[in-house]
Image (tube, rainbow, N blue to C red):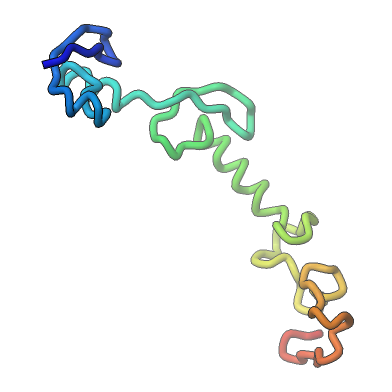
Length: 125
């Protein structure tokens, strides 16, 4: 048995050489493993900029207030055109009669000027 150092408490413990080589011998006990597995890295809140301790690894915001404010702000700005849309509209950010080809949100076909594009009266353009 070879000796290795616990990543949590720093204590030397014995482990089989094949476990050390495979990277499996990291902790001296289940207690140290549980403590280490509960620790989450610190995160920066993208809304307020505050540094906080994450409760879950996928947590992005420091509080529910910041999460709500960030989601509402993200809903206001469309990904395609980066223009702010009124709160009453939702979805893609285009009104019933807005033409996405004119705004540049939909790229023209590879032949140049949408030669085969026909108006779609159902969509209103």
